[in-house]
Length: 266
Image (cartoon, rainbow, N blue to C red; front, side, top):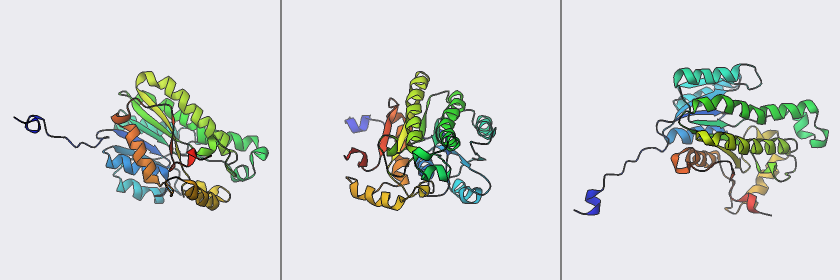
């Protein structure tokens, strides 16, 4: 008997088959969150998606239907009770959760575009609450549902570590988000939950359009990237699907750059 005859046939099971994933932050099909949701679905996961409000719903609902998401729920993290309602629905429908993606950020326009020096206390606090502390609150609600372990993701950017012109208040806020990921990875590691800060390169998303001279930033990034081009939302999604799988079961706490190598440049 040859080795090939004795070996059992390979089972090509999708790497996230049977997993349940909550993806927060889909606004349209250019969203990083949509790239993650699409990759998770192809990898076999079942999805719960959220939409910001009734104005956003018509843009997000067809995407949720295309991804066969059985849970499609409103979530504005600044509205008391909405986050708890999302996790209550997940508990009622699934009982457990395996993957959480936090892909939301916000700062008032005048505070975002006015430079850090002139950022108001109110604007700074709002940016920190929505862009950073809401991830901590989500983690607190998600952790009890991750009874078999799991993976959590928050979206950052290179401006958290180096000064990027016009990124302004979001630089300190994303730095806090990355630090929060490290501390959550430490606290949740003993129960098998891994936490990742994901740092994509510049992408043409709706959120990024609020940055001054963003087109110039995109062009410069494409020129600086060692691979010679920008990443897209599916590049981010596929990498997150890998990190959510058992192939990365002992990877946690790092900021993972998915930017075509831009961050290695001086």
